[in-house]
Length: 183
Image 1 (cartoon, helix red, strand yellow):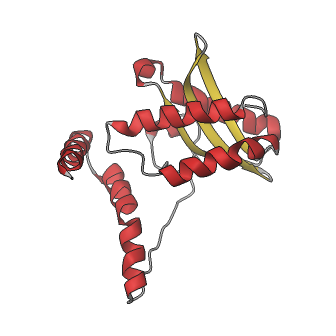
Image 2: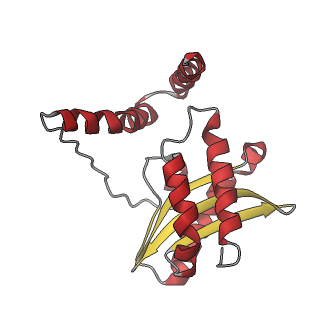
């Protein structure tokens, strides 16, 4: 993306990312507030070279996209999305490849492929840095509120890393039914 295409590319990213997670309980990252923030600052960050957007077009329509942040000698993959209708093309892997090529062109020291231990990332590298999270909950009302705020994301991460594909599907079905029952 460049300054002229940033707004449209960001809209395609939102559409594809939200669409990809819609039937799976929703995106754990792209909340309405984060979406508004990305739309507000994204074009400026693209112009400054801090936000890079890679999109693949098919017949004039964006069908896969990835957003990365560029700072100093590092590029970090943040989020992406793809049209599930073209899932067999594995477009997200092609986006990841372009991210790596772009990092090389920029002369970066490191390209971070993002959180998660996924086999497709191992196609690009054997190097790995461990991501460690620690949650400290202070014994107070605000501490409990803070813990409750991050609990859904922690639960999603645990499910993603510990359950089999079959059990993940069952969990998604249960979440979808629970959302449908809520008033």
